[in-house]
Each structure stands twice: as structure tokens, then as C-alpha cells.
Length: 496
Image 1 (cartoon, rainbow, N blue to C red):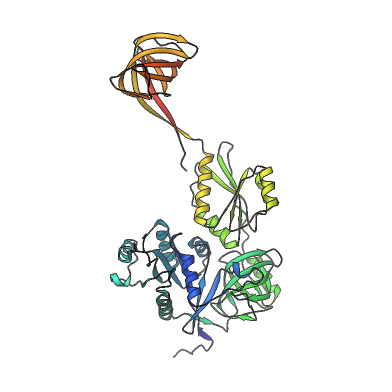
Image 2 (cartoon, one colour; image 1 turned 135 degrees about the vertical axis):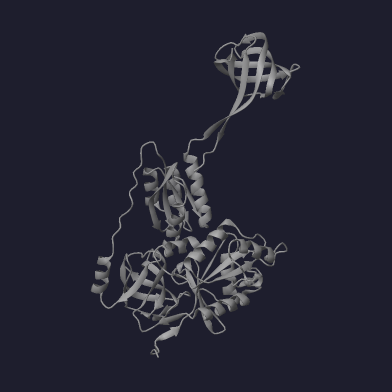
């Protein structure tokens, strides 16, 4: 019989909430905090960036990760980090499955973690939870009530209905997963967020997988190292040590660790530095761009490192065959004078995510004719970048043939042009349209219809079989028997 590990303890589940941008993920998290009377206390700006918080329900803890969305977790997963134990898929019961819902489902499947469906906005009269369940089944998410294994809960972030039932399901799934941690091992875990505090320096949010993290511990990731100067919980309270599954803000890194990096505690500074030296140093990718290649340069400023990684990851999915997207700088912090100078020299647009720009910087940007845009939702920022890329493309001109006119009579010519009479023999002609002059089926000149008359009255259009007067302005004079081929050119926005 195997010896029992006395240091192996049950740990709280770490839960990620994903789904479509407008289906109420953030509001659901707020409703859970409100239901359990969790109040975040500001402490030097730390809690607004912590990216995670704990709740206690029926004496058991649950850790929720609060991030920009499943894009951020895709970035983490690319580094091999198992970020969460359980995923809550939020779907608006009145709208159903959207494209981003399907993306979230794919994320959960790749992460290989249990899923709980939260059918939100159940308070709406148009809510149709049973219909949504069938839509989910089409995306290979079969809920229990339809014979599947995926739990589902009807909830309302607005009224609080179903919140306790959702928490019950989380605890039940966690119990079935038998989540354990070894507190005797060296402290190790995952970076789930990092940002730069203007006064304190780099601050990172960590979640322990094993061991205990304490003040003065020396720790390192693949990209940086540090010594723990202080530990702060999600409510801004200074703590002496952190345990597995507990989100904690750490002050003491030399520079910002990257989202999803694993960290480990070392006995000495020398050990941590040796670990860093062994890691591969991968330089920035250099893209060769030909002079004729269309390019959109941008400067990206975000509230936290996780947002930056999530946005950069999503931007890589935009097709770049016609327009190359080049990020001149991606940095955490508010938009400042240096960013505007860089954007001016690089002919770039500044994109900000949950950041600020002060009046001095605004005035400077206006003087230098630098454009900046700030967003609160990643999806909206990505869409705007797409629109900017499309605007770089020259509009595609499409010719639309309208009709043909046979010239029957010549009236006069003056400074305004040539006045002729004709009959529409094909299609329909319109005022302002362009003309090709055909003589014996050869194009001999071009022009434009300046005015149209029918029965001596000005008109906009003349149809097939009708006679009309035309004020024609062009390169050459038309003659009786000539055919005017009438067409319109429309500029259409390019596509990536």
C-alpha cells in the first residue's frame, strides 16, 4: 500500500468565465461578489489590476479569474500553462450561441477542463433557455437535461437568480475533480497578470499550484526574477504567506513577467539567475516589407500585461496578405508624450485599452496630428484595427454597365457641351453617368451625361425604348448613328 502524503491537501478550484462579449460575463462575476457580500478595497491601485479574487461559499473557497477574455487564456495555454480547473461558459438565454461563444467552446476543449454552462439574462421575457441548449448541442456541448454530461444553470446577473445554484455546481464539479496540492514542495505556480505601478514598479498576480509563497522568497520565471517585498490579497490586504489556488499580488520583480509564465521559488539569488541563463532568449521577429507593401503601424498601450498579450494574440489572426500590421510598441501604461512622438515618426495610430490620456498629451497629439483611440472591450479594439487596415487599402473600383443609347439627332454645341437626341436601346441611363462612344463598334472617346431631358423636362433616369435629350460633355463630338455605352463606377471598400 502506497504511503499517504500528509502534505497533500485539497485546494480551492480556480474558475475562468468565458463567452461572447455582450453576454454578461463581467456582470455575472459582479453578481457573485454582491451575493456573497465581497467588497474590494482599493489599496494603492493594486486591486483594480489583480485579475482574480476569492469567494467563500458554504465554508469553501473558490477562486475566479477576472481577465479580458478567452484570448488571454489562449496566450497562457500557448506556454503550456494549465490556468484554470473549471470553465463557466456564459450564454445569453435571449440571444443564443454566437461566434465568440463557439470560440470560447474551442478554448475550453483545448484546455481540457470541465465546463459548466450559465444561461444568463433568464429574467428577460424573450429568454429561451431550451432553444439555447439545442444550439449548444450543435456545438458539441450537450447539457445534462438533454442527456449529456455538462451541467447547466439558469442565472440572472441582474436579479441574482440562480447564483447560489451556480456556486453549488462549481463545488460539486471541484469535488469530482479531487483537486490537490502539495504544500511541502517548493512554491510554484502561474503568472496570471502583471502591470507597472508608476510608484512601486512591476507588480504581478500569481496563483500557486504547490507549496507556500512567503515574504522575502526569491522567485523566477522564464523572463525575469525577483524577491518578494510584499504579498497582497485581492482585497488589498497585506498577507505574510499565500497558499495553493490563492490569487496574490507580488511586489518585487525586476521587470514585468509575461502572462502565463510559470514561476518557481529558489533558495538563493544565484540559483534563480542560473535558471534564467538556461532559458532560451528569443529575439523579436523581423518582417521584411517591400516598398509597395501596404502597412498599418500602431502603438499599443494597455492597462495590464495580460491585456497586451491577449490583444496581440487576437491581432495575429487578422489576415495580413494585403496589409501588414506592424506594432511599433506594445507597452503597459497610460498614453504619454513619448508614445505620441513615436506614433508621429512612425506614421502610426495609437490604440489604448483601459488606459488614460491626460490633457497635455491630448493637446500634443492634436498639434502633431496623431490619432489615438481608447477602448474598454478587446473585441471592439480588434474590429477598429481591422477597419484601419481596410482604410489603408485603395478602394476597389467596380464598373456597373447601365445601358446603351443610339444617337438620332444633333442639336447644338456650346461651352457646356453637346446637346443630342437619342433613344435608349438597352437597359437604363442616368444623369451623371459616364459614357463610352462607340462608332462602328469601336470605342473612339469618352464623356459624361451632364443632364437628361424627357419631353423637355429634366429627369434623373430614362428607361429602355424611351427617347431623350442629352447634354453630353466629352473628348469628341458624337455623330448620328453613334452608340453611347453608359456606365457607372463605384468605389468599394477593400477587403483584407
